[in-house]
Image 1: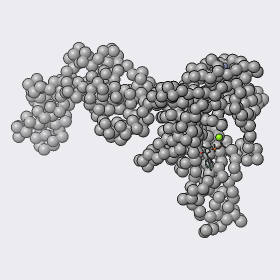
Image 2: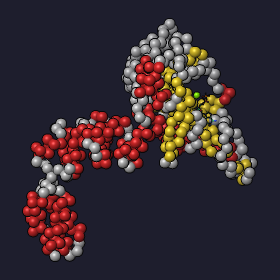
Image 3: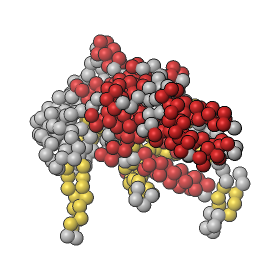
Image 4: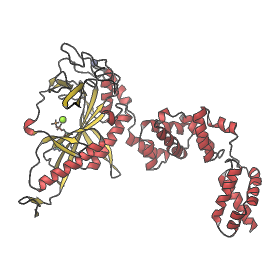
Length: 495
Ligand code: ADP
Ligand code: MG
Ligand code: ZN
């Protein structure tokens, strides 16, 4: 191995190549109205400690009752992630003390997770790569500590509104090898959870959080190095930052001949660095044991089949189907399948009017531009897919031109009327019959000697100015293509 002298005296630095090994643990709050063991609301942003009861406050003597909806969503996620389902599955107590955990234990799963041995396909370098899912399990969220600074006093407040919120944990195998792969995994998983309707995945509200494990190994080898776990990652950006930092830190240590310590670190997004939270010696023993207050959960064949049938087609598959069946470009297919709502909207449009290419253009360039600007989802868009399809049909059949179509789209939103009605009422039908256009063309040629002369002198693009005049005179209703054609014919004859 080639060794160089490091800047610091006495430290030897090698130029050995290392590659990162990354595993991610993802926590997603499930989309339920109420908590996992009680009927308290899970709504975000309510005044502190207003959504609590003796059960989620951890009072002695209370008994939890499993939220069926939460279990079903967790099962749907496990199936969407191609996991084998443990039947029955059961819950375990994970014992630890923390002020936002009034019971001093978290009900989670350890010995018999709901799902295990799954996988997810993520796009890497224009191909799909499988990342193994070690397990998927259901657990309860803790409350929140708020660290206040008030009048020179430093103290913490505890808000237990979140305590007992159903949380899904998804643990990957250590099978990712770059920040880009981890990034693709997080985006793909987020989209999958949104598609499956199991979580709203709002990172700014803490609905989706990550923990990352990283180790380094000599490039090309297949052993596993000592791992460091980084916690407190509340966004995809934070995970990227923490991984980049950790990969660099570990590589530097290894090159200097110093071992990587097994430890848990906390990411500080503001400072862009992590700090040790606990080392191997302080590693916690959670003393897991089966939760005595809850029975194992049996899942019948019928129930399993029903939930399996509720797993929607996954975005990656839907995207390739859109390319194949509708002849869309890769880019258009990926924009249209980015959210399930948009993909559903597109397919409903195509069912009403079988012209996928132009429907795709109209959704992407007009409908989405409009809804994005207004900050609403396509599901809240006033124009139904059937009506948008009706508008595109009028455009494709040459009954209105694109400018008028755009105008009609805005009027559809304002009036709630459909496109054919508005076109009729406004007399907006495109003039595409030659005899109707002829006098207008004649008038434009007579009134615009300069562009006419330019055209005759060889400047073919001068015809554009004349088309503009035809559009103006026809109040936007002329068929611009036909107008251009007729102008050229007439002018060529004048030569
Ligand atoms: P624990 O049970 O102690 O939390 P796990 O084996 O369940 O540890 O792994 C937790 C996470 O750490 C998983 O996402 C896994 O992929 C990842 N991981 C495990 N070993 C390594 C390693 N050597 N390098 C990187 N990541 C690892
Ligand atoms: Mg773990
Ligand atoms: Zn409660």
